[in-house]
Length: 145
Image (tube, rainbow, N blue to C red; front, side, top):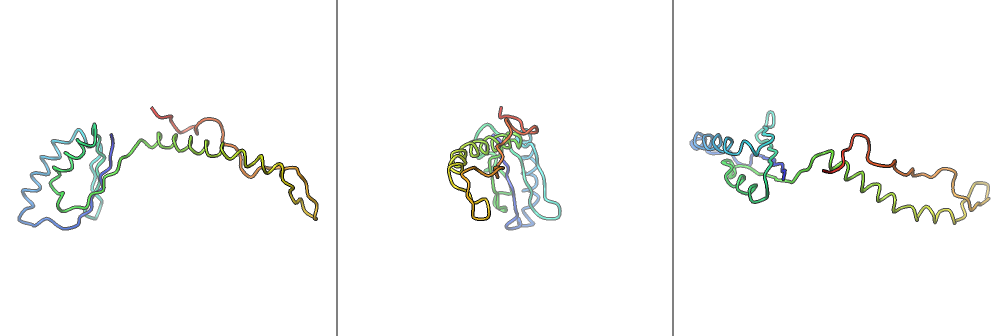
């Protein structure tokens, strides 16, 4: 499972404790290096983010519980998925939603439509305002594995 952990400073560590915290941080970083796909700091401000890849939420909790700066940071952890996989899923949902709107278009065909000048026609408008989606996902989307 992949997660992003976004960290923001809420209170600075006491200066006299910084050397030991930094030492524990270096050890923590080395211990969990294989689980951290990305480890970044924000430029010009305290905080950063990590992309964490662990087997389950139990391992995630262990990793975060041992984070040396835990008491000094606000940490937001959220599950993440591959962008192409998410795009393919959203595309599929959109197609399903548009497919479900077809009965509403059929109702439009049986209603009288004002064609201007006070005349009415039971014909639907020449062009439908909504085009059906093309078959399959967009060319740059990959189906979920």
